[in-house]
Length: 371
Image (tube, rainbow, N blue to C red; front, side, top):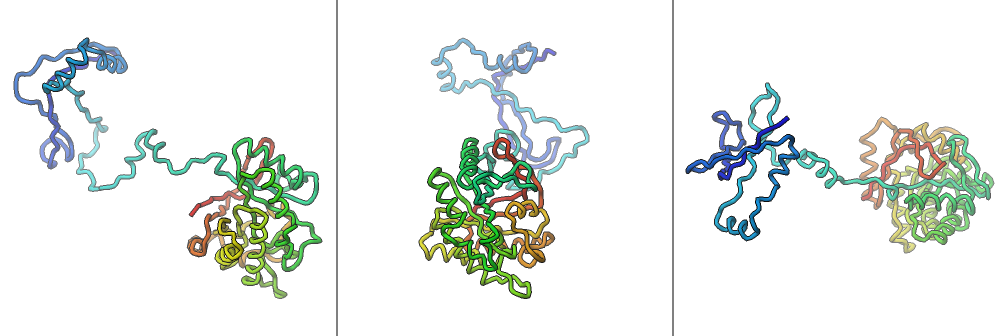
């Protein structure tokens, strides 16, 4: 459909309305022509908005010098008339809210939204869990179809190589410890020649630039399957467990771990681990705390992968009640105050993760929050 676009060299002033009287709503602008004879308008017939824009941009044939002379003399081309888009009929005319800050300003176009996006998810943001065991062959995990316990000297290196090929550079280790090495106090957790320290040294030797996370907890090493030392009446001892966790974290740092991750939910363990690491000279080793870890049946497949199911009872005296969000905030504040560098929040969701080709993992969804 053809349209008519008027062009006029008349100068206009844009005057801000100061009240809501008359026909214009508050905050609107009026186009007021200057006094003097009205110049003749020129109409151009165009068939589309694109052609109209091209007509506006078409050169007039004047030289750069002539255009500059007009600008010096104050003879400026007329700007396009401002037209405010119309609201639908029946929209009330109101006085705009007195709001100095309007967050929607930064969302009004795709370009603005992209410019102010705070988080961009890429493979570099992901941490790939690696389940390892003492065997040479990879062993399938029944509760996690497509996932395997990796032989620490063979399948492990292949998996890391494939992950790096798609941009994943961070890995967290979860061991399946032989039953013969488990004990009520989990002493194997801080054996410098144990499965996890050996694996860390191997990975750092083959891939020096990767980030290695470790799990700090006693359940893979405990003959009771709990995250802490169990008293004869079934009570999980807190402070005695924290003492063991500190030795475990130092052993992992000594092997070359970049980030130690206490997942036990014992009170005070973040501050104690930070002090233990600093005392041994590992000031640069980070702590990622499992800050809000809930007692959930969704951990079933994970515990099967590590063969770490509790031999009796449950973990509700140290893992959180999913119904308590205020308690999660208290845990978060405590871990931050004690020196956690990253907070990891476990969500009660099941997701399907496909990090490397042909390998998937069903696990709990997580959010990592750097501090």
